[in-house]
Image (cartoon, rainbow, N blue to C red; front, side, top):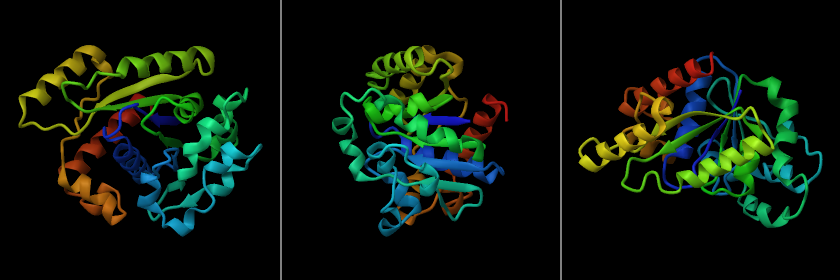
Length: 253
């Protein structure tokens, strides 16, 4: 089962969700692989030191027939493995311009290792560029984090257009797993109104659980830990555990 966490907007909790969803699924006993496809390398930095990431996902895009299995690294969380990113991924768009197989590079690399894992989670960059397209082409599902702000739905149509294009052209089995409201501040009327608009737009696709603004969630990456290790009793840990249960239920696990 391959799931991409995607939204072209930055600051919506993609990496937080990728890290904690992956960790939470692994803690349920599922063999899980997190692939960081974002040149910002935020997921990578939580799990690995810089010297441990000299070999990284950039090789998949820069070399033909690259063996992605050689990049798989264990994390300190049982059942959780990861493939690190690189700042050099920022060059992929320009580097692969015009290449006929550019949108399917990642899919070709992942296919041989798919059976090794129960779940593969892809953390994508905040753009609708070639890397995000590669992630969507490779996936069974996409999970869309959205913050409840007055501009929450701005740009979402562009993402949905990209989703539709990828589905029609490269990956007819691609589905939206769900829409996750993140960084919710229950003290503000704007957040509540924006959340209602999101629910009215996406209906049952919206996860029941909402990720509230939470200091522990913000602090945990600095301590190189997922929320379950850093603050297991926090509201953030409880919320992401509930999201894990919803995700498992939606994919039939």
